[in-house]
Amino acid sequence: MVVELKIGLLTRNEKAWCSSKVKQAFIRNAVEPFCFSFSKLSARVGMRPQVSLGEVDLLKELSALLVRPIGRGSLDEIIFQLNILHEFARNGLPVVNPPASIEKGADKYYTLALLSESNLPVPKTLVTEDIEEALKAFRRFGGDAIVKPVFGSRGIGAARISDLDIAERAFRTLRFYRHVIYIQEFVPHGTRDIRSFVVGDRVIATMMRVSSSWKTNVSRGAKPVPLTPTSEIEEITVKAAKTIGCEIAGVDLLESKEGFVINEINSQPGWKGLQTTTKVDIADEIARFVIAKARR
Image (cartoon, rainbow, N blue to C red; front, side, top):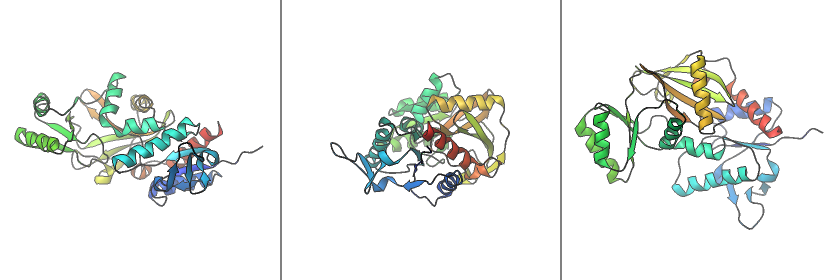
């Protein structure tokens, strides 16, 4: 007997480029995706259904769920959304990526700590609420450091600081608004870095991102360039993704004089720029992976 699969596609906008591509990939693989957003969901305690979209009992109807970026929201919204993902997973619904990995990937400090504990190379980093400790780290990093928000993506809010007075002013401003100070050594890497895309336990595509500045995000104007990954890049990338529990991940590497350094892991990566550098159909790889999980 053939079991009809219903794959949920949790997305803020099903017409967005990545969501649209993966939706089409599901259809090509004979699966009709069920698209919805968090804003339409209701969760219940002591009542049924536990999680629903209107009259649809999602725990009964879905075979698996693919989560596209959660995006910005209030603390209440983000916690509620993650709680729903955890509820799906607790009740046996395959969720890609698993909610715990989404939480880890969203937190730069937590991600780097886990990578470091797994003996993977990461930049020296200090996270603190103490301005004096932050200034000590700035001096230790040679007066050239990156200050980032703990939560964020696409390089938004990240700044390279190479002046002590400006550093102190930045730290005091962050603390005035009750932000934690996240300061990281600047790793010289020219104006390029490497993005490797992991699906399951494989690197399916890799590119070099070439920019005119130290920020190398494609969304900020960097140029995607094809790159064939070495076995070292593949090994580091796959191990990094597994360390935080990601089944789909974008892993960013900096190439320093001492070797590769893992800069960040995106647990909800886009691939519009990467797709221009490879013949691999990334959306199709993702769709096939999720379908395979649904059939297990």
